[in-house]
Amino acid sequence: MNRALNFNAGPAALPAEVLIEAQKHLLNFNGTGMSVMELSHRSKPYEEVHDGAISKLRTLMNIPDDYEVLFLQGGASTQFSMVPMNLLKEGQTASYILSGAWSEKALKEAKKVGQTSILASSKESNYNSIPEFTLSDLSSDTAYLHITSNNTIFGTQWQSFPDSPVPLIGDMSSDILSKPIQVDQFGLIYAGAQKNLGPSGVTVVIIKKSLLERSTDALPTMLNYKTYADNNSLYNTPPTIAIYLLKLVLDWVENQGGVTAIEKINDQKAKLLYDAIDESEGFYNGHATLNSRSKMNVTFTLQSEEATKVFLQQAKEEGFVGLNGHRSVGGCRASIYNAVPLENVEKLAEFMKKFSQK
Ligand code: PMP
Image (cartoon, rainbow, N blue to C red; front, side):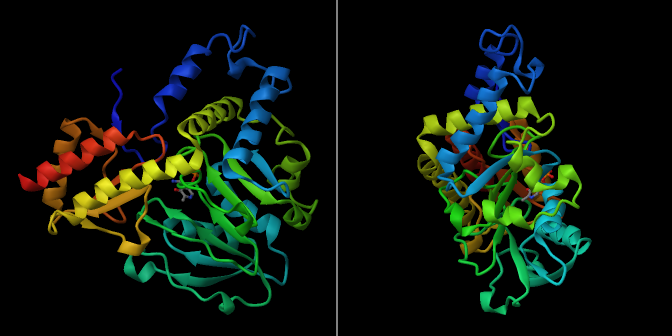
């Protein structure tokens, strides 16, 4: 198989096993004589895929019964608006911790809906860390506290989550399912699927049932969480092929031994690259401070733009894909989501070492 050494930030590498499985059933899914894409979303075979995906995610993430699992469209970016539209009431304030460009975008949309405040920000240090904050600074009218658990662009990640006195909202687009988390620390978790869960086109929302009471009927039907909760995310046509692939990715995660086993491999992968940076005697510089380093997106710079160019060019010639850093950080970024094989990361670490020695 001629598979690329894919370090794309998202859409990103999918497990080869998942693609092979999908390919096998592309023309005839489970004896239906149709692909999943051609099935009615009201049919029994599709229902099994849909419900199977929900229940597998529940099992893998150990989601308590008092939470709903919803499938939506519009990407995580639509959640930037839906979260305040559904959860922020008149007279309340939505509080945001700014740890990168995606949290800024989430805040920007919330401002269009109601009153907001910033509890903490690491913007001044070009978002090289998760900012310090004090929960007691939250005002008594706070509707929720929003965080971005992994900052895809800057390569920083929350190492633990606060026990917030108000519902904690987590944008987990780039680290969901990469390690065990305690869902009940959150009121709502959302994630676009295209990093750790599957292809783009489906967004997962995990919401505490009691929060659904905040959604009023005045909201547009498709922007109301209750619509999805009341109809098992089948009020209208869901993105069936994306949900099918998500289900296959969840089966794959289960076969790897679940999120605990996945976390161990992710730790190993991240260590390989951070060691390559730390042992390079300043040839490579990590963007993130040590205690905020992301295990999903490893960001680093070289001494000069010229050196970066040569590095990226040679990496490309060696078959590495997706290593260009985001323009706001510069340098390089290696995204090492769940489906990026350990051996590909070993190859990259080896390449980095050889390149710096040369
Ligand atoms: N939040 C984070 C942390 C992201 O990494 C991204 C996408 N890279 C988004 C939100 C936006 O997601 P989408 O493209 O699905 O709207």
